[in-house]
Length: 237
Length: 241
Image (tube, rainbow over all chains, first blue to last red; front, side):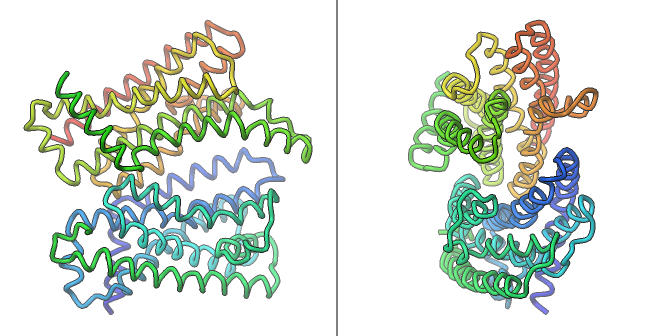
């Protein structure tokens, strides 16, 4: 019940601050861009676009939301209500995943039709989006300014883009298999061709495992940096 | 002048303490290093592996990456202004001798000056384009763009969350050089409303030795940039009041 209320509030918040309108503009721009991409490259570009934008939108936006909440002192009254940190985190991750999913489907359907494997495609987007959102919240809990958050979040996210090197056939390493984004790329590729059951299970497993790890880390960050400051104006440490 | 000096000293000291503000300086420097040293390596690799000659696109790469510099300095300033507005710092400046107008002037001139320094360094040292006196006009347009990017966020966003969302749209405006270079014929008119289109057009005209076209591109670009700056200053002042 508490989660449902928080989730509905987050969706309303994102709507009110124009996230959905911004993504209509962004998707329209991507569709124009894809129009000029030669056929031989289009599939790869769609996967890269979907991975780097709708998939990772939570990385930037979640941090901004939490920083604004910090400034407005929302955490003080929020965390004296029965809401738990885990519900707060899941609501942010869930609500931003909805936006990611809509944007990814919008781009994909308009550019190349219904995905070949809609379930794999959707799972890839949702689990990547929630991972990026939780990573962003874990980082932003330690930041005071928007610029410091932007820099730090990029530094934290950098190792997770390494599997792109393998995807682009620049450099491949078995170590990439340990990163969640390797799973993302495999699932997103499933939008164009059928993926094997092994790839499917591996991708879901690696993404879920990383989501759990990053959830625990984000929860600890929030408890340490946000909850501990409740009563002091909510502006971090 | 004194009042601006103390603000500048504060910003430099803040930048020295906070590595993040240094990023506004180091990110363009990283672009410079990538263009100067990584571009030739990637060019050799692509040639040997895919027989693709990316030196054909060196002019485009030069102006495309140079166009990201006003975006970087402008957007970082814009987000800083939103931070300062969310924390009510602007109201404090308004009651100092600097006043609100002085604060805005300082916050707009700083990214422009930074942009001129960094963009000129990039165009001179990246090795991707020829050095030409006409580049001064390109730099002028890029400098105005830096202020426009800062105001785009500060004037239209109600807070930093909306600022980040708008930065997303602002980032798309980098498509100007791509429209000027890749989009054929009359379709280019679609890109002409993007400010970054005009410095790129003027840049290509200079590179191809068409001075009159470059002057015309610069003229149209200057009018568009100044008009944008004027409109955004008006909106920002209205919003702060």
